[in-house]
Image (tube, one colour):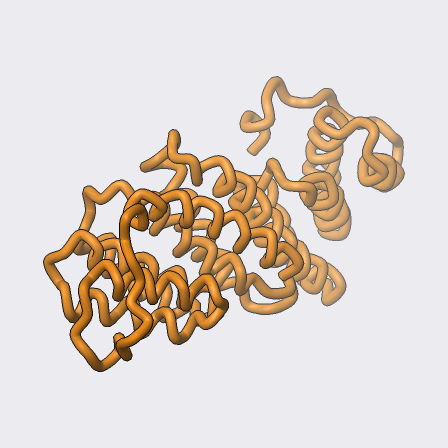
Length: 270
């Protein structure tokens, strides 16, 4: 996606800040092959960090795994677990990153890096969001993870960006419903189309697709001869989006132009 570089830079910023304390006073060892030979935990961890900073993400994952293998009870091993997941993420190895992060959360549920782990899991799904015409499993997963992060850790420094990405995921899912709804409308499967447009209004009503969804409902009801329902929906559209071009189109579909007064609230109608 176009925002991948920016997102990964955002993640890297917080990650470097999170591990900076651990790096003070640590000295790297560049004389040993850390994947195969025993090494002091500080030097081993720092070699992994140097490899990560050098852009060798796959090599870094192996080195961070070696930290945990050689020094499983060290605090560095705990940090190495999440750093290995981050290296997987940077290498676009999203499934491996998710597996590592889920393991980290299970092993260390009270660790202060758990909110970050949830955020990074969400990014692993978010980066794989596809065109609205295609399957949206990754979008659904991103939505689920970001929603959980916001609910469980609303004051986390990652929650703000998660909210932005959650809005974008919802807009994407609404777009998918619109693609399917328009297809049914063209095929004259009006009930199926109506159900799709209702989902946009009921589940994704804060997205940019809501005005068109309301207009398409007017079209669907008019096609079925349900003029009263069409007028009700047109009233909701006019009340909430009076300046929308979709309302102008809906208004034109009402034969006598008599659009009923809107309900007292959005939810009263639905």
